[in-house]
Image 1 (cartoon, rainbow, N blue to C red):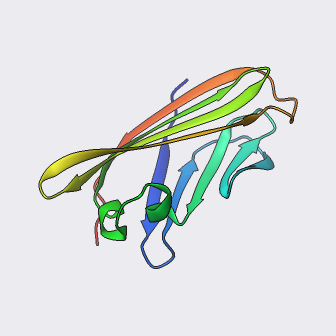
Image 2 (tube, helix red, strand yellow):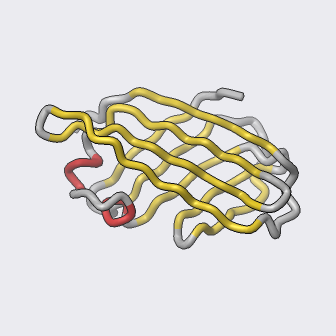
Length: 125
């Protein structure tokens, strides 16, 4: 399933936020070691908040202002909940791939589901 989403980066707070456009009602927040994932009653993604994003992706804050594309894969199995986030950032006129894999035990009794989102974007100052 593909859907629309937007993302923004605040260099002052060092916060990367992904907002998923869904009509589903918010249900709960999953905490993946300080990366917060909001889901709906239908287990649709509502938002992902990544505090200290430059540290999480091991880059400088200025690099996250040059995100060219972003992909998210949200996968729930009977045993685990997994989130894969990949970013393409522009640095020194070259594209650099950044990735983040989050995984935790599915102790929320969530049903099996896979959702993928992609966006291409250039941040403006």
